Length: 286
Image 1 (cartoon, rainbow, N blue to C red):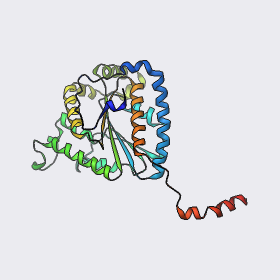
Image 2 (image 1 turned 120 degrees about the vertical axis):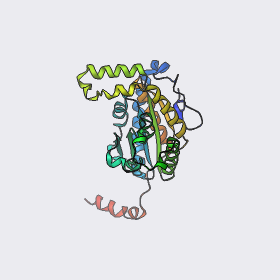
Image 3 (image 1 turned 60 degrees about the vertical axis):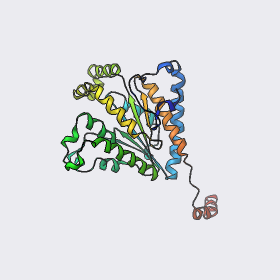
Image 4 (image 1 turned 45 degrees about the vertical axis):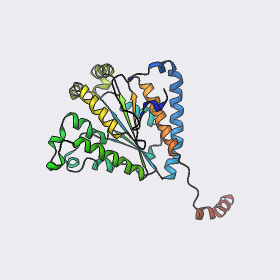
């Protein structure tokens, strides 16, 4: 399937039921696609170098997923090939008391990369319309009654659309990715965390409570993606049961987005160019 088939930009509605979560027919092309993933990462590194040099635009990739969908390994395998000097990775945990005393985008704004860099969000501002909605955490917020009306999340969707449009118009592109893992695969990965010593650190009994809310999260993800997908800040819903395939698709998104941005090396400063004959003469004279 071409990468556009996984893209939601507001022109169609997402329904998670029935969407593929594994590689499907692509499993027969594993060797070819793994090789293409390596080529994509190399190409992305070349484009990233131009992006960094030009300093005109930034790219933010926001990763959202259920537990055990493979966010950490995806970051390690796809993005470790980029220049770390021009890459910023942020993992957003449960908000602190200080963060909760500000608006919900306060901590996100502080993590936005400067133009020229790529920012990678491991979870993101979308937790505030996903986990917050599923657990009704908005009811615990210290907000004026006028802010806690029945259209609380409808207003947040509008705010997110407008905020991402604002970023786009100010040189920061946002691409959102949801890793769509199946219940069966999540179960197997949870069992691995129990059985394997090297994965114990990932184990959380709280994950089982989240698993019990599968249907609620499905509804939250569908509403969230359908309400905030736009051409300027699209969502990609990627099957996450087969990790090598997810990595291939993520590398395709990365390259496609950077190619659309089309960064170029900046020309030499005219004053510096005027000094080149002197510099070259000095070097020749050594």
